[in-house]
Image 1 (cartoon, rainbow, N blue to C red):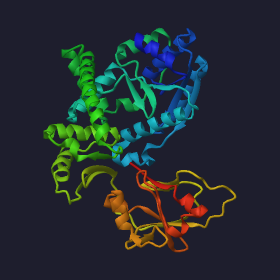
Image 2 (cartoon, one colour; image 1 turned 135 degrees about the vertical axis):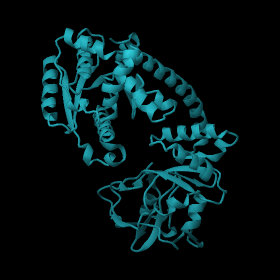
Image 3 (cartoon, rainbow, N blue to C red; image 1 turned 45 degrees about the vertical axis):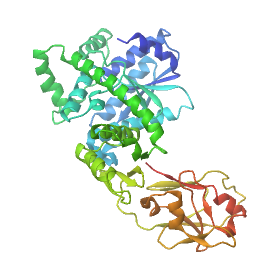
Image 4 (cartoon, rainbow, N blue to C red; image 1 turned 180 degrees about the vertical axis):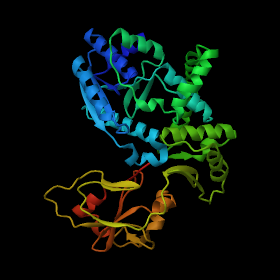
Length: 445
């Protein structure tokens, strides 16, 4: 069932987390891994995780079933309840997308709590799942990345994500389950052909198999070819991005000079993919190339799609989450914990406050216009606009940048992208001033 390469890789992990729904596929995967563990084929621990979406009236019953299976096998079991319809993913990605995003978030949270253990997440996608994914991407007009479908080995925010069954057919999994007297649950939603994947599974692929019996195998092979081509292109783009991006959300326009528009689009996609954002449509991508990149140097155009935007300032493109204009805000902060805003986090880079410190309460508010700061005792005051320009801060960040006030007086402006915080002259030599110098505002991308 498993390749020799996969079997050897199991030795690299202290913990294997199996996404366990109780269905046929994940039941076969969990059982086979348990057998291998009993044969000492790997030394790491084995854990099964059931994510309860609550979308079916049977969800709690399935959770009980999964727990019983694990108890019988002697495998550790954990469950996590999520609510896709109540999540912010629901509006942008729909029910299926929201459930998938929250499921991965639950897996990642569990793995992140394993105190530095070498962990991997294993999912039970098989050959027919791969064929369905390829066709769904094809019908959406996807490029190489989309047609690559699912990789056998990927990443989930710092952890390996393994799909060891991608070359195994559904028929073979049924045979394995029957041979080993496995029991599994049937999700009634898998029969609902309102979902595109189910329509492919029950209507399109069986029709194709009547003419081409090995169609799923051939589609999986095509996906592998696309993945290899995408990997080669991606390696080239990685080297370009390393030299063209001073920070992940910023890319130099010089990287696009001399490229054909097709290659410019590919580089744009590679940059956005590196940020793990939803790809813009072909129309929006064309607007970025023609309206943002080609604009005059003194212009600051932008294109947005969904909750994302690409903007230009001077010789760079910037990615930024798209929000309506933010109203002026103000809040009191004691500096002991990071202060989280919708667009960033205000924090102290070092010298945290201790219980013995008695610094005054700080008023944090955004720029309103006309603010000035004196940086030297006998020197002139400087407008914040000029200081921000010296930093190379784009105008849209200036509107949201938090400022620090004490007793109604502006005393500090947190550092931008590694720059030292500007502190008013009268505070610079005080203990408060030393603390203020370490303030920074980390932008959320």
